Image (cartoon, rainbow, N blue to C red; front, side, top):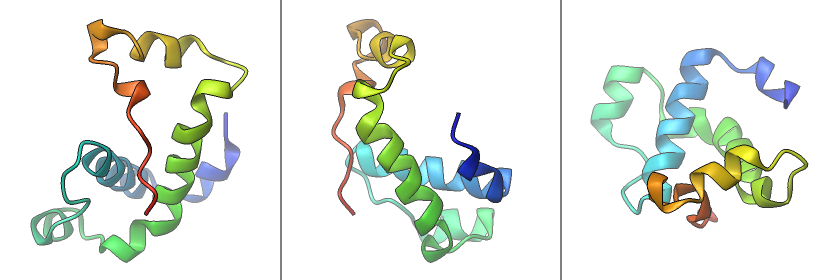
Length: 87
């Protein structure tokens, strides 16, 4: 559990997670449409998104490995093994 995320609104965490997932999948991380409907600019997401990316990057070496192992399987398309974007 990372208590640092308590500082963020749930809607901002959702938007940051969406942005990170889009980036990991090779798509543009944010669009004017997403900004319009979420009411968050890409710059609003930067801190939360970078913290999420850091968690993703160190998930394979974390003490709790069950979730990482589960989502590294082919059944879940090995999404946990995808590289974390650097920006």
